[in-house]
Amino acid sequence: MREPSPEAWNRVQRYASWMRRVSVGDLAEGAFHVLRLNSPALGWFPALQGLSWRITESNLPYADLFFSPYLEKVVISPSPSWTSSGVPRDIVPVIASTVSALPASTLQSLWVAYTEPWADLKESLSSVALRCGPSLTQFISPIPLSDAAMNHLMQLPHLRVWRLEGPPPPCDSALPSPPTFPPLTEFALAGGATRGWISLFERLEGSVSSTQGVTPLSRMKESLRHLRSRNLGGSPDLVINVSFTSTVQIFRNLVSLCVDNYCHDGGRCTFKLNNDNVTKFAMALPQLECLFLGNPCPGNTCATTVACLLLISVYCDKLRELEIHFNTAKIVEDFKDISEDPRFQKLRSRPRCPLSYLGIHKIPLTVDSPNFEVVVNGMVNIFPSLHHCTAAEDNLDWDEVSERITERREM
Amino acid sequence: MIHDSTPHRIFRISELTSLIASQLVLISSKSTVNLACACRHLEDPVLSSLWQTQSWLNTLLKVLPKETWDCDDLASGESVVCGPFKKLNAQIQGYPSLGS
Image 1 (cartoon, helix red, strand yellow):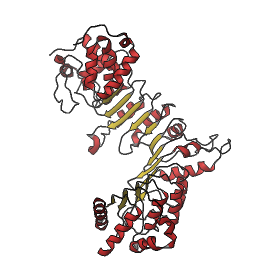
Image 2 (image 1 turned 90 degrees about the vertical axis):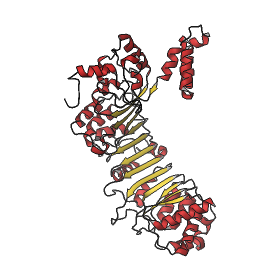
Image 3 (image 1 turned 180 degrees about the horizontal axis):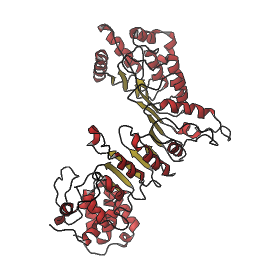
């Protein structure tokens, strides 16, 4: 076995110079160091545009080998070996300083794929965000950013997809005008930050700038297609009430609204709409294809009934996926109302949406065996394309309903 | 083996050959390699397209002559032990590590 000649390294350099996108994981111990020792003057990857960097102990000290000034798309993820044990504490500062050095002036997309918020990287990731320029179209990170970094991202004209963690920056009265949002198509919030952002949207929508009729949300309210709030741990910070649904209607072109709000067993239900509220909401957003209004809970205290499903099916005629709380205490009577009550007469003949997924989760169902068919018929009548209702594992009665719906579709 | 023949002049237009290669690589890597081997004029633009995206770095290290590296674990597609690297490892005591 012999060592590579200079000509052999030149050949590697030639091939490396062609590379535009690469995934960096582990190499044999010492390999990165040898690459550094033999690095050409302009680096191995002078034209690299896409970097998928899975941070490991072995590649971390050499990450700068891949930091081309022309990077456009960067994905950062942690080593799988840290998934269960967590990142060793002595490595966190090294990751922070290395991430800080990431070139950002030509970045179009930055995706930090950590599954949990990682406050230790807040400053370094904020410094990257602050160096991002107008080329940035996508910023996805579960790591909180500084107020300055968030204000900077808000001003980037081509930002379209923004998934973030943490509340909005406080409104600074010293600023000459409130922040103007770019025409985002997707905005996703996590970690109990939604209420703060919804309040901000309410305030901004109410504030009119010097140009008549133009608000800081003017572009975003036309462009936004996907709005998501994710809060899987802790107490839900968001109450699904009239105020929330009114604010969401600012974004009149939404096709998906997903609120992953989990009401804890025994806790207070956060769903506060009634059938009339749902009707107004559905009529205001008829183009919705996906509507998740919180994870249906076992409380059975909500004011909505299966009638709200009919209203949604009629008014949101493109809807394919739905999760909503509805009270089942009198579900058999409610289905009878739908088929007999004159109030629903006009709706009964209207076309239904092509919904195939209905999330039931922990909504209880206690009906006698003969009444299962009433429930099955009622659900199929409202959602003719329904494949199945997805219930929690121990929600056996809804499983029975779901099986009967599936059987009926297969007949 | 690369044939050294005079290609049609159209293949001297680098933008065109790059465009052809960039489309071909989407269809078949093998055909792209064959094209690179077909004509010396095509080698660089075609290989350039082929090399634009690499899933893992060890593909690049395998450009080194085979006698300079060992492959311990090809199945994982990741971990390549290179002979000289192994040797260097023994020599290098103080290369940057997270522990130091």
